[in-house]
Length: 174
View 1: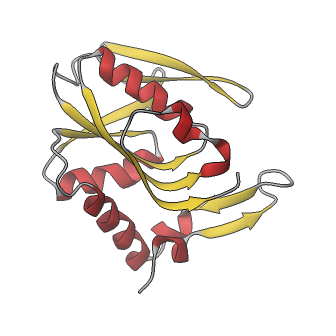
View 2: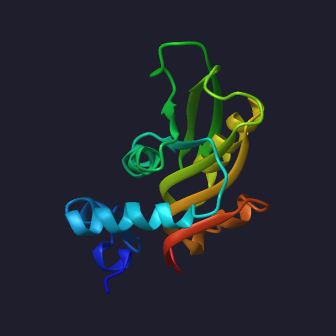
């Protein structure tokens, strides 16, 4: 039986020497690989009580939206700054070289709603931490965080201590 790792291609020295790039496009380009990834994320949520799934632009959309649809849940889009049409809240976080800002609509979460975050990858955890801060600022509660790939060598899990985190494929390096 195949695992999600069987569909992930590793590309050495991309985008720079010494990096082992974990390519999810090979998961998406294979109907069985994509189905396995989505079904496995759904399995991670067995027994979890929640109201909505949050996914960040753009790869969080790719995996989070089909899970939300299959589980008959709402989907909260988290976008880069300036992309949402109504009143938003934002969170700025550090990147390797600079900063980035994410936004959600101010009315997208009601106090007490339980939220699952789904994304393709956890590296340093900055993107996910920014999402958590916005969700909690609006009164939501993050009850689980699911990733397709985890780069354990970058210690993102440490940054998100105290949250229920699960990953389909864990790679020891960066």
